Image (cartoon, one colour):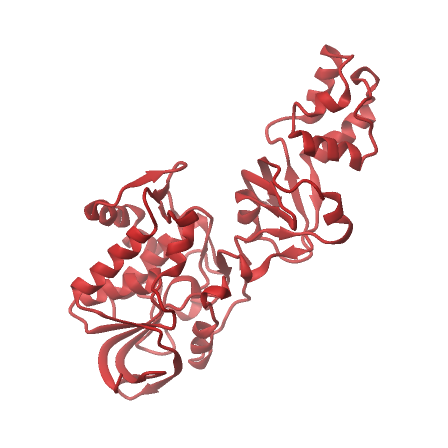
Amino acid sequence: MAEVRFDVVILGAGAAGLMCAVEATRRGRRVIVLDHARKPAEKIRISGGGKCNFTHLQATPKNFLSQNPHFCISALKRFTPWDFLDRVIARGIPYFEKTEGQLFCETSAGDIIDMLIDDLTQAGADLHLGVDITGVSRRDDGFEIATSQGQLRCSKLVVATGGLSIPKMGATGLAYDIARQFGHDITDTRAGLVPFTFGGDRLAAIDGLSGVSLTARVSCGKTRFTDGFLFTHRGLSGPAVLQISSYWKPGQSVEVDLLPGTDTFEALQTHRKDRPKQTLGNAFAEFLPRRLSDRILDWHALSPEARMADLGKTVMQTLSDAVNRWSFIPDGTEGYRTAEVTVGGIDTRGLSSQTMESQLQPGLYFIGECVDVTGWLGGYNFQWAWSSGWAAGQAV
């Protein structure tokens, strides 16, 4: 690829980058998308178990984490989940609503990728894969991008290379490096939407519970989520855990209610009154999966053969606390290896919320996961990719 000039160079062929390219090209801009991966949009391909949870119809700013919670408002209002759904419907992609507002492809995540690539091709943009970016520099008339296949020049440069999550798919800190090069601050980054890990005695305490699942309420500080909860061979996972992990920081305690909506103390009192001859083990197993209920009794050295009639209030309170107020400090998380997103990123104080353009370097834009805007589990992060990519695509 000899030195060529484009109106817009987009680094990253993920959800945000492809969306931006489509929009910019439709406006008559000469656009090229570069990515070091051999295939485009691999995060789309693996998302949602291969079905791609491509948006959430109820996405609002409250569903996103950022040091500036107002930053995402403009883009989300100007390109909404319904706008993206209109494109899915027009394309004829079959989809379904798994839970309220969460939309998935009926057939395959590849349908979304094919739609984006076809839109890109029909609009007339270029897509070059397997291209390493070795340097970016400012020139009087724009930017120069050094690549493994030659030099490119452009008037506008869009960085859509994502964050640090899932490095085996090629995630790097390139966006942060470019941002720093042009004077931007990076907020602290950490793995988000990621399982918790235990070690030592805490891990030993849940040995044998891997695969046990239920609905639980998980809290960290004032934030809480009620959703699926899963014990694993390394710690805890499930949607409720993944959600709260984005808010958790090392050293913070997490509290779990394994029976949300049930006062375990009162329930045990009722059992003792109505079925005094029932064993504690059988009674407790009516509330929780048997493996888990037996383990909780074991944690507190309580015999499952004890009769309910012999159960004192102190024991019932102990079990109630263990079920409704289980508190612990995770040893850590599984990290970027399995994290679905990166929390934190390029400080939004240096960006325009209308266009995603740098306020420090005209002509430079940052979109998608690399920006300090992180969505909840359930299609919110894809919606941020569509919205931020669309916003930049209208401006470049």
